[in-house]
Amino acid sequence: MKGSAIENFSCVIYNIFLMNCTWQAGRDAPADTQYFLYWQNSRDEEEMECQLYIKDENCRNVGCIFQNVSIGMEKAYFLVNGSSKDSLIQFYDEYIDLYKIEKLMPPSNITVNCDEIKSDCIIQWQRPQISHSSKDMCFKYEINVKYKDNPKGKPIYTSIQEGENSNIFLRSNTRKKYILKMRAAGSACFVNPAWGEWSAPVEFGNEELVSSSVWILLGVAVATPLMAIITIFFCKRTGFWKAAFPKIPGPKPAFFTLADTNPELMESKIQSITSENEEIVLVADIMR
Image (cartoon, rainbow, N blue to C red):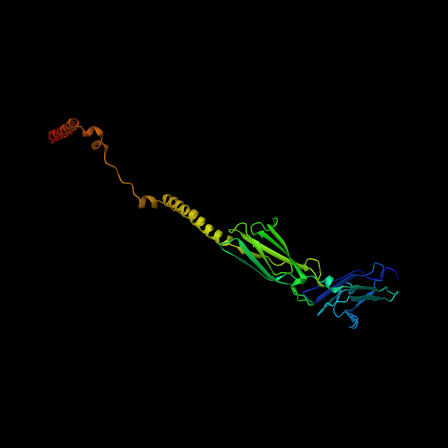
């Protein structure tokens, strides 16, 4: 029956030994059609059926998960056939180079060591783990470096490194913090030439130490006058300021004016004061 065979068949190998194959039911397949996947890794191995199917909401097999998969030099053979009570179902088969469907892990153990005096930083890493090769020459690497304070901006440094496990990055600013990411692809051998996943970001540089000390100093500089202003305002509002700093009364101006320094004026003022006192005394005597 035409249109009953599966469609969009694809497989991917990940985490070194796991393989995931998926497909869609044929567009004209009867509703009760069920599919079964068989595969043969090489001519020397027997054909095996999937042991762990992925099912859809109708309990129809639409995928399979394989464990302990090893990648060989030969193409693997995949066969998906189906069964239905209403009609015969077309089968689907395909030969696949397993290394071409392997999704490479990022490089591991990425380290960055910077010279505190010079501007150069040495980047080192280990190749991704794969099941069928242990040669460094089989890989190439892409290095991506950005400023930490602008992670979405354009990379300030990119490099493609082949067959080696180290690289030298020259810092343009030794007071900056940087973020580094890496990914790998096959350069030779039987390794997938497509780029794999990016590694987790690796931070390096000295920005955090400088910025933390600057922020502490700025915090102290702002907090000190602010606390002083708040304290003075509180004391004035509550009356504590007058109690703590009472106002000292000044001397009477009658005795400390510039005119009092003149001896003649001083003598006349004393006489006037004396005469006024005498008049007060005479009035008091008359009243008695």
